[in-house]
Length: 347
Image 1 (cartoon, rainbow, N blue to C red):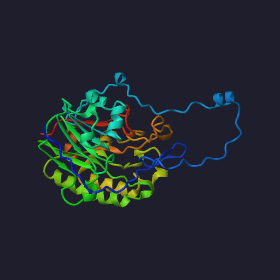
Image 2: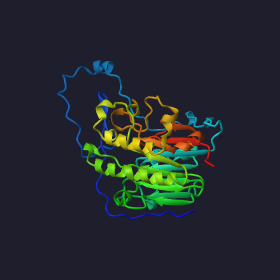
Image 3: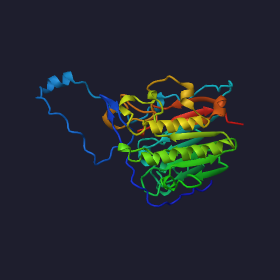
Image 4: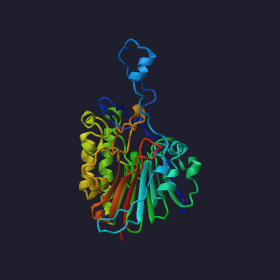
């Protein structure tokens, strides 16, 4: 087993992820509401009716599901590639919103049911020495790579593979130190393709870190363009942007919120124009309400008020090898759900 390189970086600046779901009007920008933030004051309450009358008039609010029904789920697929061939490579990606918390909720069971050849994880928020027991010494995944932020409990990514990559790179090679010390990207070279998993910076509540995000986008684009000159590239992870209006529940009310600003959307468009394809929209160009993130608040997941923030992007020349791109929205354990790419291994 190849040992994991854990890099220690200078102190990471505070980075507030923000937003919450407003069910009556909008689903605002993705992220976690700071614990100290107070709930907005409500209007004065009307005079209360009798309890019996209230019970009849007010249906119970929907609650977010937290347990995955593995027995009732079929993760198999007979999809064929564009060339009519069976797929033989499965890649999965999941923003786990804290690997230890996700495992407490049964998230580790996803590995044994999905059985991907490679699993990429984002927002693990854990250093290797503090991994949960469920993620240690995995017999089926002897090649595990973890890149942790210097700040404990923040950001961080991981890559678990059945086969050993030819090489593994942590972060950007040149410059990009601010991003590198936050543990945001692993690049694994396999024999016929590169796999890049990333947790893209969030623009923040009030767009306070939009500049950092706009510094990230061209760096990622140049990184994968350079790789694509050598081998086809597969990019996966939490890209922290809903690219089109179809990719979030309430686009009109979120155009000035993190994850749906024109700058972020343009950056994603430029990435695609550099020679990459959004695999999900390739197969499902008009599919609505296909989301991968829901805030925990106000029953947003139960009501499917969400955002599509997680992607598998592939080099355009790989499209004929891709069989399907799937959103596993019935898998629970995080405020994101896993996504899976099925393809014929490139030659």
